[in-house]
Length: 123
Image 1: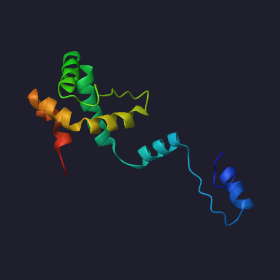
Image 2: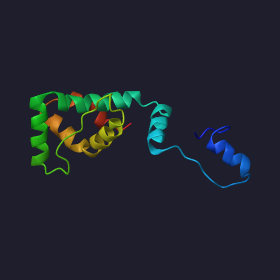
Image 3: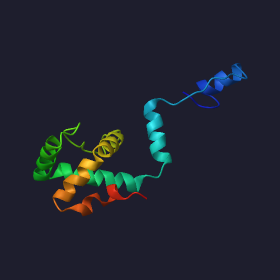
Image 4: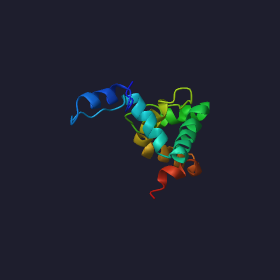
């Protein structure tokens, strides 16, 4: 539909030469294009692993929620990532980023600092 030659974009540019119109993909496609253009697989894997460690173990999940309540965090939980809902990756990234300090404190309190090494790496 927005092809450069035979789609709307191509037809518009042929009929209106010298236009100043900028065409953009829809928001969902922009997200998918950005995800495929950036090689962030290692970062995605590390963040997803960390979020799923917290969410997949019942005791750890309950302790983490209690910890967030005790430190009066803005959020009450970390999101769970699933491959079926690929748009959830951005939400998981955002939530882990916002809870970064709380997650690091939680794992240090549990003497499990190996799980959050990636969050502490500043390079």
